[in-house]
Length: 407
Ligand code: AN7
Image (cartoon, rainbow, N blue to C red; front, side, top):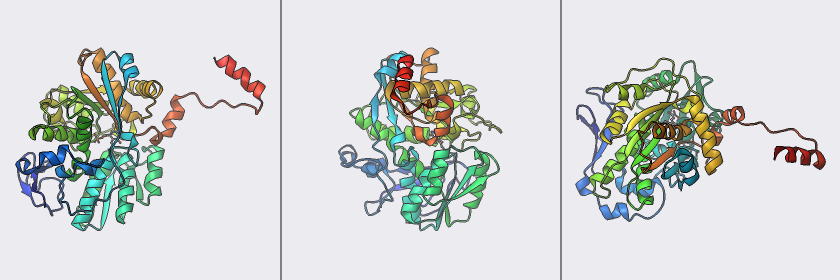
């Protein structure tokens, strides 16, 4: 078994690998998986064969004997986006499209690792609260692992495609009278019963899977790093995970810098942006978060401490964007680059545009935007913002007239 420990980021308390623990029993702080980097084989990391999350197994908390619960997660494309770059006024823009994971979001990277750990621990079921994507992904991996799956969704606040996935793959889905933060509070209590394993991003094993986004970006760029990585922030797990991935590569001497980690929240749900701008260590939770980007409609992000550290120590920044800016960016990305993303994901593009206009991002910075979820997750939003299909008789003359008129 590989050498690692589960350690509190605040007080340094350590917990055994077979302990089911999500936050520090000593001080309540967040936990992190720490490896003995001096014992890791660099060649095995840089020259690893295969694709996706498990290719980076040398930097995951398992020995070689573990059989992953996996369905080809990761290995998503990193597109160079010159037309979008030109529209925004920067020189070197890339989009890492996490919407092309098996369930249509980056969550699969965390779930393959988290559910594999759950199976290893011998848990009897898995659970999460979710704004949608976490539940869709967990339902799939739970089905693969033949584990009962319990999902808490904020009532009326989850995009249709995500609910469809969760119920299709056999999760027991509860529509909770409350928002995401209420759902997370309740599911954390449910999971105090040890046989049900919590798979929200407070679970440090989830973030181990998600850090592979950083590995793929660096590898695709020839084991080099972009100047900046921009992504939407909700519960703040992903930005923390990607920062950790880059930090590990730097510790190992594979790369020599860490990109400026830049987190974007919606204007109606921006506790982390507020804390960042006010130079505070702790966030003030928002009771009634509201945005059309339902994936990031989160008022009390659990990973705030890790995310603030990621942005501050890398020279990054936190910014918010309005729903209008999100919609504009979603359309721009779809029509200039052929990349279809859900609203939350478009926040990264909207944030880039805003920060370039503000002069916060230099025009020559090599920038990677992470688009976290697929367009088809939220078809109802598409119908609201695009011209609807035009009814027409089955008559080519009528059609021809309409086509000519439209040209
Ligand atoms: C598309 O599914 O929190 O900052 O419960 O679905 O790591 O929370 C989703 C989050 C960004 C924010 N983009 O990531 C859930 C959930 C999309 C997302 C985020 C989410 P974190």
